[in-house]
Length: 396
Image (cartoon, rainbow, N blue to C red; front, top):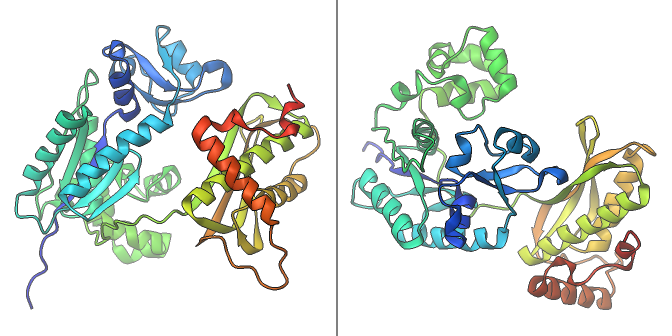
């Protein structure tokens, strides 16, 4: 039986992507400490930060108020998601020109399978990195390995070993046959599927490195952790057969907002819930999806977070139906006068298109459908605030 061909997998990560796009738009930002995200007085967080800002300890997901304390001279740049989306699509077009086997993970991250290409994987990675830099002016790093797990981990390690003064432009390579040896000395948190809770459980067993997992009896790992333990035992040995999947299916659509001040006013909370439901419906229609499961997310003033969900009889993509379900969940969950820090609405359980209703379901009125379509078009062209509900104006 012929041996299976060794795969050539690349993992691409665009370095400080939002900041790189902002520096293209405003070259005066280059070399300065700045962060993309919300403002401190609005409970904003750092979405991306420049390498100059990182020298002060600023990092992604840090509250902006804390980032400013670490770096008083920090320049705060509001997010421009439309611009980042445009830049991302240009990058993904370059990837598609190299191979049809591209799996986009996020706006700035993707896997590529280049097994069928003749050139060496590291050579292909260097060419791609140069093309992204020279044609689009964006920095990137790529991990090179025989599977997705190793390519991702290699990229993470390559980037972490770079200086903080400039983009790393890393291209770490894990040669075929060296997968387990590469992983062995790394801390367990570098392995897919090991979060803080699992890391603590492993530490209590004296397991601190990925090599420790690999040396532990696989059947005992499965006995202790179930299927998750069996997966960890396999991954710790560098084994990952998961394919690069070009079509990444949307699992959920959600919108959420963090309030500037904790809110306990029911009318304001319900208006926000309405706006978020409208946003979810608009995204579903844009993606051609209908969902059956509506979820709300609430975060109290003490940061305790909970979610509640309900499954509808039929899939929907209509604002009123999403809001009705979200409101029902909210009224069952919220305790009167309890301050809310964050509120969100989400939809999952998708089917494509606007689902065909049964004889017993009352469809949204045709004029409601036309109104939704018209509002979607206006908001796409002129922004979300061009058309607002009368109830929204009551708060002003």
